[in-house]
Length: 72
Image (cartoon, rainbow, N blue to C red; front, side, top):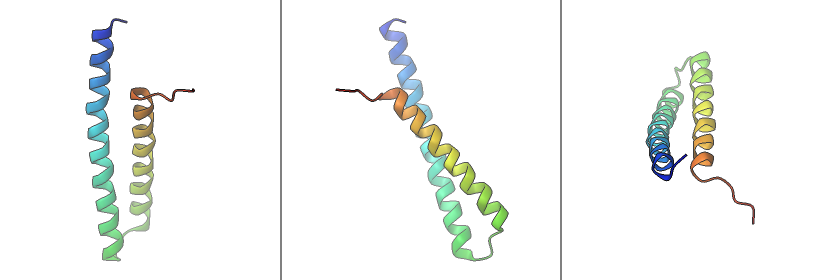
């Protein structure tokens, strides 16, 4: 793979990372709002939290691809 192609791939990953971080933040706000309201459906909260966790895992995977661990 040439350098230009690799750089383009990294830029695509960075954009995807920003989108996922935005979704994660939005879910965090939604979960907080439902918890504060006190009338939240527990099943809905559980589903939102599970989705938030999946997003966090995906974010971690992308960050690892962009900046892999370097063993010194």
